[in-house]
Length: 202
Ligand SMILES: [Zn+2]
Ligand SMILES: [Zn+2]
Image (tube, rainbow, N blue to C red; front, side, top):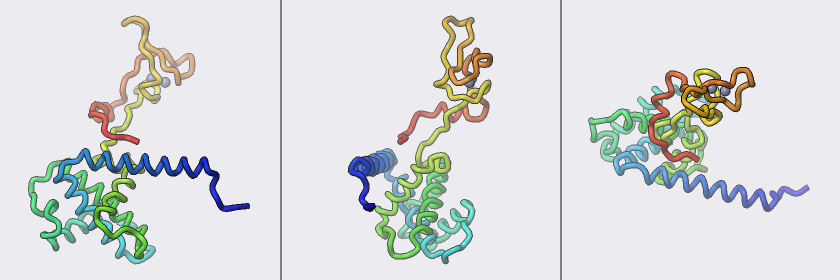
């Protein structure tokens, strides 16, 4: 037995790494300067605070993490101007602050020693990459919009096909034969979110 990975797997992993790096770069490039600065400050402070936690500490709730990060940034306003100097937070800014500070904190807990990145650009990269792995939890930063499911059958829209003419109901390919004759109708609650333009996905 050898520990070497098969060559095909090695090249697959290298491609995955490249694709992930490209996705992070694309996402960062889609932000305004202010948004990027805000995320960078929040991620770096979250990371620093997470690193300082003693091993085995219970994970804080998102809300507590945000408060900790915000207070720490307010204590050093000069180094956190994007966060402290602008009172006109939009809802999106708050969402970005949540995503960056919480994921920064979580990543800091993963690297409590000197192993992890220290440079704030590297931390930003690490945090955005990690958010992209949990898009449904970090929706503002990643632009994730859940796919609406059919109110009738809970299957995705692309399983459905329209009827041949306006009066004939469509069909759902994922349904059993006796339940498949209906048009797709988005379930309540996620329909509005699905109308948002598609943001980068991986
Ligand atoms: Zn359906
Ligand atoms: Zn169905």
